[in-house]
Image (tube, rainbow, N blue to C red; front, side, top):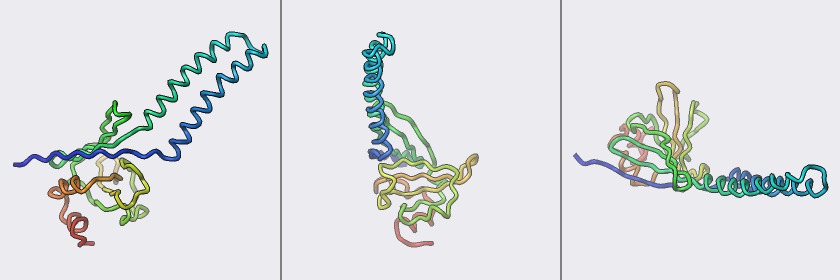
Length: 183
């Protein structure tokens, strides 16, 4: 029997929230040591605050690097036989497996543009795509989890990953997704 192993990397785009957090960190790193130095020069606090300001400045430089590198994330999809493994790669150094699921358990797999999310009452949704607003390339997968109930995955698989899922998906999902027939 042929073994299936397909990988795909999806780079996460920085959102407006990420940019705001980064700008606030920079402002805080510059403002706190500056305020301590100004207070020390006007004899309002002890001269030791200059040393504290210098320490906070060096810590702030590290904090800026830390925040920026942890906003550099990628998602990796791996299809191994009938199992989809979704991992998050942070700053190209740290890998965290988010989920491992048998694709046979999918109740639905549709393009994000075609699914009505308000009709589903997801208990938990895993967002593992580059851009959440890209309805053309994103797919939703719905499945039932024994402990959590109805769960969903928002991800962005390419055609190769979708074709590797095809033999293991339910017949009605395959008809609707690949042949535009069904419901």
